[in-house]
Amino acid sequence: MNRRMKGAFLVLAGFAVASSGHGAEVTFEGEVKGLFKEYCVKCHGSLFPQKKLKLTSLKHVMKGGESGAVVVPGSPEKSLLVQGLKLPKADVRRMPPAVEGKDLSASQIASIEEWVRQGAR
Ligand code: HEC
Image 1 (cartoon, rainbow, N blue to C red):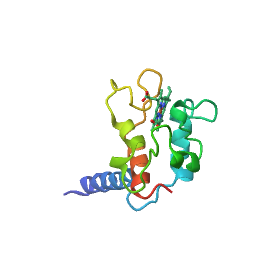
Image 2 (cartoon, protein in one colour; image 1 turned 30 degrees about the vertical axis):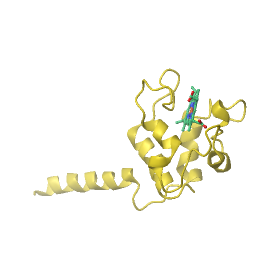
Image 3 (cartoon, protein in one colour; image 1 turned 90 degrees about the horizontal axis):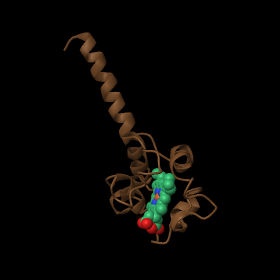
């Protein structure tokens, strides 16, 4: 491997680590709250939240909505909130809803997933 390729490889490797969240702790206050504010609180805020699910504070997120808990700490695959982010656009349970919402990027979804995996703190 020549020097330039090596440099590019290191940059890519660094990016992969950063985007998968390994090493750094993902916290509600640090990262997730801002994402919910931008993408979810319009419909899951304090006034008339959809399905009674408020995503404005960690306490409210953990309380869940009409379906009960939407986050299972340590288990993103069991968390309704994470599942919703990954459903196809055609699914009505997809979040944010395809018609009105703004899409999260793959790395933003990965951050939320990592936050749940780390225990949703
Ligand atoms: C445009 C409005 C809108 C936005 C934006 C939105 N939601 Fe929703 N959300 C809804 C509606 C409507 C439902 C009820 C869907 C249904 O009928 O099952 C819902 C339901 C949910 C539920 C299920 C709650 C329960 O108790 O059943 C979760 C979890 C959820 N949303 C998470 C999110 C997250 C996370 C975001 C941001 C990434 C988000 N939503 C953005 C409108 C929205």
